Image (cartoon, rainbow, N blue to C red; front, side, top):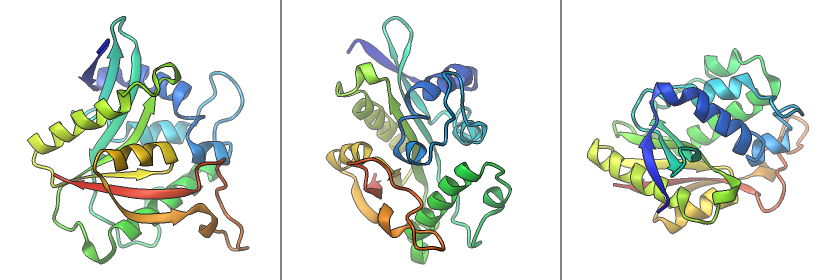
Length: 217
């Protein structure tokens, strides 16, 4: 391989966020669907950056693929799954001032409640793959696969019982399926509607569903 894998530390935060602004923030189907990121080369979403930063840069669980010349070509932000909340709407959602990003947080909470129905993962250590992104010039070359495989090794070493990934993109979902993950919850975007019965997210084809995958370790 003409790249290697490194654990992300807090010292990598700025360069990782710069990478995500370029290759994830605009490309991700939900972000694109609601035009979360304003036009402009350096524009961003502060709330999304905070979400990326939450426990991702200091837990020694997140990884980046680095090319021979030292540039980041892929990022996998991971974290330990928090115990499911019984609240209808957690405080972090109520306090979010960005109306567009709040829609994404609400969707993720909806998925989380369905994944954790009947205490499915209660008292288990679950590592969550939260964000996966690869430089457009390196896609199709196995970078994401390598990042997930390395994450699996780390999760096993640290005693996690499962790895979980909520895939809002068809491509990340297909990769998880290829790597032996099992689909445990599927949400069609057309079924996730507002008070008027209109879909809240209408991502471009082929992204029609959000699918949660898990892999037992």
